Structure formats: structure tokens, C-alpha cells
Image (cartoon, rainbow, N blue to C red; front, top):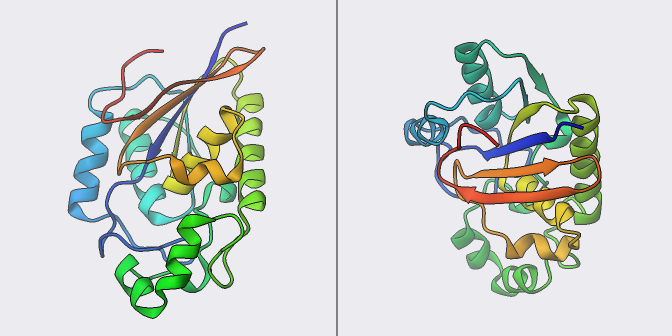
Length: 202
């Protein structure tokens, strides 16, 4: 059986810089963010399908790349970013100024000390892992690219490695960082994570 190759790329820097966007804040990519994405892709074109989060910091690039390469694009709501509740739209400094203890509690125990109104991590991991499993079934033996968010990629890396929701926040995901997961039919392996560019082949 031919391997199914899943490349994941995080969106580049959005307008407004670093802040908790979650899935309610829909900022577009900055000029720098667009440059980061194109630099990460480079001349690579091994994909047969692109899947994207519906948020414009992902979908705008997915649409542009698909047009360039002549590929189909599927929008999957389950690949939107984890919800950060009351923190959405705030910078780390603003959260700390509002409540240093709440900020500290979150990074000490991100599973049980969620911001008010934030999405539960177990539910988030469930929706993203189900979306990945469905993509593997639907595109068996093919090479696909998923354009998504730091939280989504953390979740899928943790899922691939058999980790818990708590493990998500021990995984760094750079803007426009590339991750590859390979499904052989018997097992799913993390081939690489957080690369600055995409190799041409698996």
C-alpha cells in the first residue's frame, strides 16, 4: 500500500502581530506573513490536494497556492484554531496586566485552567484528530497539504505521538513552519516538525 503523506503548514504572521486569536479573530496575513509562506513552500509542488482552515490567515494562502499549482482546495471547519474565549484579541502582555495569576495558571495547567469561555482541549483534540483521520481515509495513498494554525498542528503532532492534551503546550510551532506526518496503513509516523521549508518528496 502506498503511503499517505500529510504536510502541515502553519500560517505566517498575521496583521497585528502576536496575540491570542483563537477562532473568533480573523486577521489577514501581513506582508511579512505572505513572504514567510511563499518562502516555506519554495519551488515544492508534490501535493495533489490542499485542505485549509476557513480563517483567512490560512485560506487566503491556500487559495493562492492552489491557483498557482492548479490544485483543488477543501475547506474544513475542524481545522480552525482552538478557541481562547475571553483572551481572544489580547496580547500576552494585556492578559498579564489583567490577571497575572490567570496567565500563570494557564501555562502551568493549560488543560484545567482555561481562559473564561475557551474551548476545552479534549474537544479540540477530538475535532482535529477526526479531521486528520478523515483526510487520511479520503486521500489514501496521496500527498496532501493542510494549511492550519499552531494549536491545530500541536494537537495533531500530539495525537500522532500518542500524547495527551497537556503535551500540546510543550510543542513549538513557528510561523510558516512545516510538519510532515506519514501514514503507512499500519501506523502513522511524525517524519519531521517545524522545518522552515518543504522538501520536494517524501
